[in-house]
Amino acid sequence: MEVKTLKTAMHEAERFLKRAEALLENSKENGEFNYFRFNCSKDSASVKRASLDLTRSLADLRQGR
Image 1 (cartoon, rainbow, N blue to C red):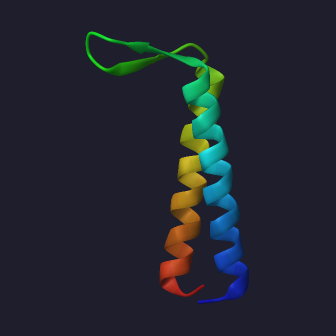
Image 2: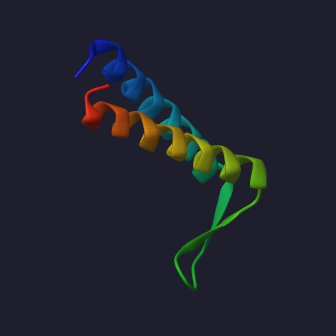
């Protein structure tokens, strides 16, 4: 495990959490099904992108790159 890869994974995790928190703040809870209705597709897309980047950085971490 390289330090640079670990720091990258940590950065991506923080970025994902910030985007996810922003998405939750901008959403409305639907009481009937306990799902969230997302008002802004930009927020939803940014969470998905951050999730993808986090997944890739964690894969690199596991592979020892």
